[in-house]
Length: 432
Ligand SMILES: [Zn+2]
Image (tube, rainbow, N blue to C red; front, side, top):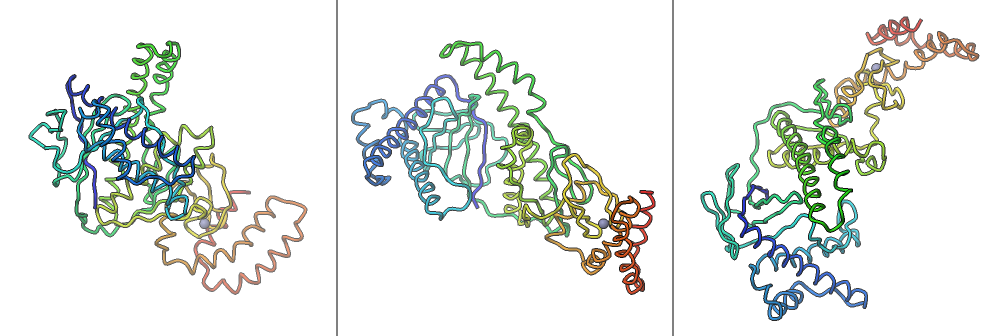
């Protein structure tokens, strides 16, 4: 399997200039080729191949544009390879041959967003505390962890907060952890990030919420600046740096949590949440994005793969928050503010999230009490009718007949009277 290893690098002023030049050239090649492809498409001509594009926008362009020769050529070729891949993904998605969400056609690259340049093959070298890149030189790197293998490629990244990174792709064999014999169901939520079926609750980190005031202040200051001014760029950078910090806190939290879970459990079960749908709700969008549910799922899944664990996702229509995890009785849909409830059938007091987590695991690994579950569900109407009687109402007679009918049945079942039944009566007395 392939793994990415990312390290922070610290280029000096000269090297930063050279990087900017390199990024600019990669962007130029990409944007020119894309514009060309768009033009051809408008005229009804098929997209040229990678080789044709390379000939036109690298080999030939270098003859006219001397500055294109001042940077390493591999990243330029890789840029066109990426463009080709972006088109392939788009075409496959249009044909319906690609899983997941619809892929959009490639877009133009902007000078202001994240910049990347990829080196492959033998044209970069790795040293003690430096990496060597052609036409840039030796750049200081901090090896925050060991590279496990010889990498197959190296991508230089500059993020919007102007930090530089070296990201290596390494071929790695999956390492299998020893089986722990434990499985876990996880319910993801807003007030509590994750609730485990064993009752553990993990608080969310909410870095955005904690920095909202600061962010608003920065954005207010930014809004007052003149477009195109140096001050505006400085203020933009300040906002970008804060965003980068927020993102780092979030990803750090998610990494730690997912690693911890993967170490402890053989099987991890999550619910398939419609995150993109929920984010459309404007009241919840900010809070949900701040949590990073989707990232958590991606990280956990990747780590399960890496360590030979089982990762399962259950259907989003599974009534995990409606069902009682003790008897299986469906208590109906509950509003989001209902955090605790008591099962009307068996009287168990539930924490909404823990109950959901137990149900999530139960979908994948049903407990052996299926038989008793059926029975209690069948007895269910008695319970309801009694409840109606207590509440009083017009349909009293109807209820009486129903409960009489029930009581005859009750005698039949009475032989193997279960404890849950008793509990339901205790529960009712509470309502009186
Ligand atoms: Zn119940």
